[in-house]
Amino acid sequence: MFDHFGWELLWLVVAYSVVTLVGLIHVVILNKVFGVPGYKEEGVTFMKSPAYVKTKPYQPIYNIILFPLFIWICLQGFGTTNTVHALYQIAITWTIVSMIIDFIGWIVIPHPFRFTLKEFYVDYQPWISLIYISIFVSHYIVRFFI
Image (cartoon, rainbow, N blue to C red; front, side, top):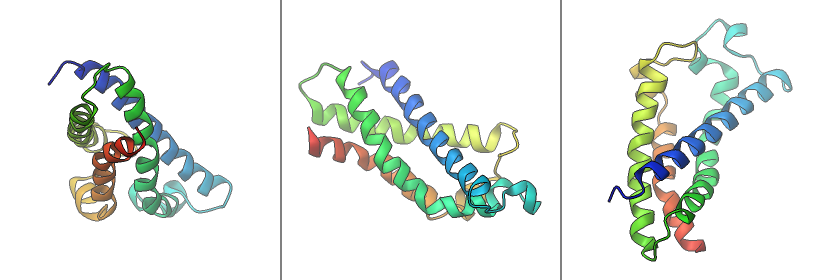
């Protein structure tokens, strides 16, 4: 089960980082190019800034597009003939580890974009649930194409 755990974590961190970067770039473009106010202009938390709020519906889409790509890349390093099992293992691992990374990175560690538990798990609904679902179903998308 843990034969490729390090490889999985490497590609999860890459995928997670790319998705997060795409989301932040989206917020910056809305703020700088289209003039949608950011959290500093509005004097609110990042989670409540108009620029961030406008990106919420797109966040599951970033995940459903990008995670399958990185799952496919990750799978190439497995060298297995049992791709169904490997994909399911990746899906479970990536979904659970993403939840842990989110909790530690967005709630526990202090930084300017930090969220409260309520902001992240209640106010961020249905988007956070859709993001986790999209991470999990990404392996079905990869399976469809291979």
